[in-house]
Length: 262
Image (tube, rainbow, N blue to C red; front, side):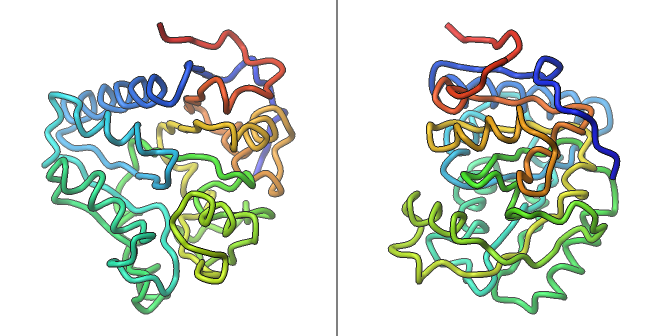
């Protein structure tokens, strides 16, 4: 994979006072893209991230007017291996409760955490690669992960979905966000969309609020592109918009004409 030198000044970087403003702005931007794509081509294919960092964004997106959700096809970014849909930490459940049911999306592809892993990877991966992805919504983990591609991430595989081992930092983040009571409950493996597959999306919105993410944001936006900082790979994509709040952007040294709301 050909990498370029990081240049924060060339990034489309938007910084807002707090998560509420960030979520509203990211939701509005996403809604504009969805409406335009539906008007241009009759449908839109999206990848949706999960986690606490996406709460306000998804709420704003679900409330956006003028989106024909019957023409939206959604793909799941990652899921824990062995976790049933009924579990409070299931990302499939998260998407059902926070995006699919509120909008009435009928075309969606969830990763079955308790299904036969290789069959789940094959089936959803085939659907994913059936046509281009118009837009992906992603975040950055406290350890710099992109989806569940923890460091050191595989930048080379062409598989649409892979099985990954979750590192301790990632698993501790899930406990810290309240999804599990303690580290022993967090699964050690997950099905994750691969790095190269994420990069195939025509447009990416990277939505990262919270002080907890500040060090990872600095590393991935201002550091070198490296598998040890998986989300740094977004520096190589032609169309990424980063949505940060004042907390997550607090360690950046050269944030290139950020946009403050209000």
